[in-house]
Length: 320
Image (tube, rainbow, N blue to C red; front, side, top):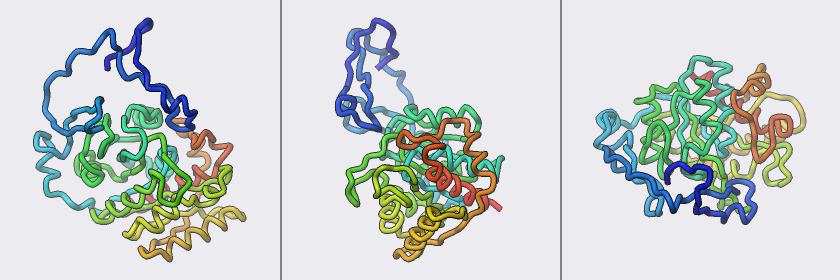
């Protein structure tokens, strides 16, 4: 669409703004009708993202024939036991990274962006800040999402690229900003977290579930372990994963551990792992990007970030 400048007339999409949506409630510039951008320079790549929409983008996929990495990925199907932390919400990403870096400060971390939320990687201020701080080695946009350091056709090739191209020690999978929920058991974009666990397992990775937890959400279905996690990990994930809980004392965390124990009795027989969280609060407070989930920061909903950070601690411990 080009780069807007003061005085430009712009075409806006205001549908989400008009509805006052808490996530995604922005007016988006669609075009500069009086000053169209130059045609893009022809180049390699035929992966089309945001397919069959007027703003579809053609990119070079790390996995396609024109990529220098095609031979590496063409028949690849093994992550070599790489820990893969799977989170429902994008807001978990900085906390997971903080946990990993606390225990394994030199670990190479790749963020694998699924397409359940915002499709442009550039929309995430967290990813930009973590990249600038050197906390992320790469962002890989998969499926219909686009704009990462590498593009991949699927979550599976995105994970393989994290391991075999980026050389990541740990991958973190989460949707972009803008979680979609409908208040129903199956109608939320984070259901894909269960499929991400399956993808990591089938590729011989070590899936680690970052529980979506809250002690401050006004909606009771998200208090303690969210019903989203109970569905995605408890029913969609058919591959065993490590369900990580902090060893923190108190009635709230006792309840979280009871809910996690229920996940261990799911058909997949997930493994519940309790983790010592010494030092995690300081690591979360020192995050190079602001911690925020549903508009709540670390002080307002500490449990949300501790739960995500604990998954990062465990992933780092798996590195040996």
